[in-house]
Length: 468
Image (cartoon, rainbow, N blue to C red):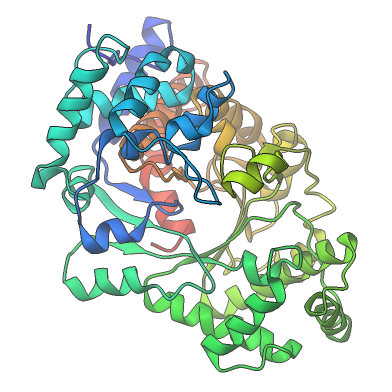
């Protein structure tokens, strides 16, 4: 048997499994729409070869190295760079061997399924990764990476990606997107506007970042009106490079709709570094509502990603920096938190507010009922820790009865791991087809409708919600 079971994730009973297979066959080869992610636009701009298997699969992927680290393996041993420039392993073969020796730690995880898919479907490996196969698999993948058909643009086309969105800071100069555009390559790589560094008073260097925003736009960002004008200018600039969305990674889902004089006073305190934690949260909440209003003008979808306690380990943050596997889900309120924004603009069907969660307990209690009535609100797919077969199934079971399918936005992969993109979309399509087959076999959906919904979930809803 190869690395992949052709019936993986389908129901056990043969009747439902057969229908799931039939549904999947109609969506398996649909183009990939990847409306939110973190792949590096530089890959597609320069189209240079990926350097080695370790840097492709291990060192940049916190899904992988956090699991190994949880068993006591130092991040340095996996090549994760240190803030101070101190020693980390730089021999990619040593990193790969360590990864292969500990591959069993990923058993039963979505990472294992994604990796097996990439090893099998992208690189043609037929044996499971282990200490015994480490060197042979390394040599095979390394050889593949020297070939033109494994360069980023060739893989983009091979993966049948119709469009992919990267995510850049509001202060990014978008040089790589400009290079992609000027190259004449037909691949569609767009950006997304991520303003956390200039809307979060608790972000390191907030005041300096706001000043830099003013320099980029020629606006006086020491004033509230100038600050808002600068955001509008940067959003317009991002739209020149294909942006159709903004992205906001706040600690909570709090929104505010303060009188403009109060918002201006709060902004002044933020610039002065005088905000309390409560005031900083209120300012972030005010900016979500301001961004929603800007979206009514420029059409950008607004994504809210709350509920992660970022950089839980202070020693790891100090030694290795942000995004090193120590972001942990927290309980999150949406009903009260989103009310100011939804009261202000939630009834406007021109607006697309896409909300994600790391708190599964709110699916049926809060998010599905909200999305099931407010025209502007849509549910993002099962995300991050729940970007998994069981997480996706629970998402459908908890939200469909109240929000339906058409107040959700299909699937997005939200990944830095380029070779996992086809695997992640394949998992989502299989899980959705399994769920739809169960609805049909239990008399809750007609079979012809299931085929339409499968197509919508795999392709159309993402294009519609993100205006792609």
